[in-house]
Image 1 (cartoon, rainbow, N blue to C red):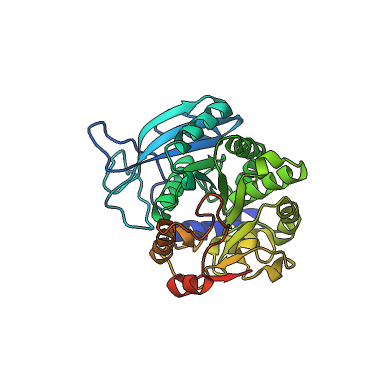
Image 2 (cartoon, helix red, strand yellow; image 1 turned 120 degrees about the vertical axis):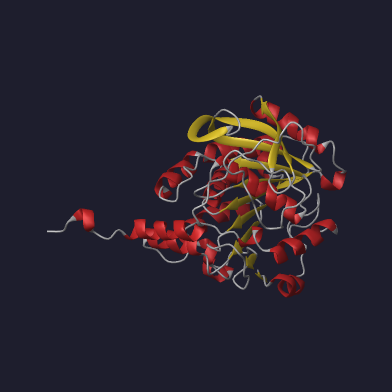
Length: 370
């Protein structure tokens, strides 16, 4: 007879190993800019979330909300931060020179208030930059981490347009993978509402960017929109970009065709050395995830560009967010955006992909296949 208390649990072992690899520092928090500080640069960020509200400076908790909540924040951009890094306030102390901090915040009145705020931001931009990006975070991510990761990525790549963050109620714990999966399912309808609100604005077009388990939220929402023929929403979505997608390959082969048939391109950013995705596959007793593939031949030949980051070395211990932690990649993407092209959807009405694959591979090690 087995002693269950002493039995080896591979799931707990794998997740504990990931926790050690990721480090044991304090979790992300939203620090508030001191009233006597004058930021050198600020970035307006619109937030949509299926998280319940919480007092400042947390703003939104890990509890699920049946109501989609919306907010607008101004983020102070730190002048002395290194590209590809992200520091959070520690023990109540803030450092405006190295940390992204909340300079102001406003609760928005439902999706109409959200759309009005988005229109107001678009009105401050030239016509070629009246675009947007929606970032959907992944597993084991609290609200602060989801927001600041999106802000850092936009800042480091020089992405034009309005930045929108959709945060779903991840438990923010490496040991609650299955709980997060349920919360990802819960979040789909709220994301659909958010996408509809963005499409009802004056935005020319926008990207939907998902990371890790957030790609599941994105693809399930997009599949439903396509199957329901929600053309008014889909028509302004320039592309869906999936970073390190924690998706079963067979499930993705069901999700993607309706989205592609609706005229929305899908772009994959993958790497074959992603430790987080390897753990996810082992937990399920499966093989590769979509974020592990090297070409679309592994997806049945669907016409989807694959940006393979396997050759890229970064300081990311889990190698799960290389695109946001490699200075070489970020500098190259910034040069494209500042040059008015951008690798993916850089200008209003421009092509989805406007990157020379040989130049990209030479500068960053990324291999592009279609």
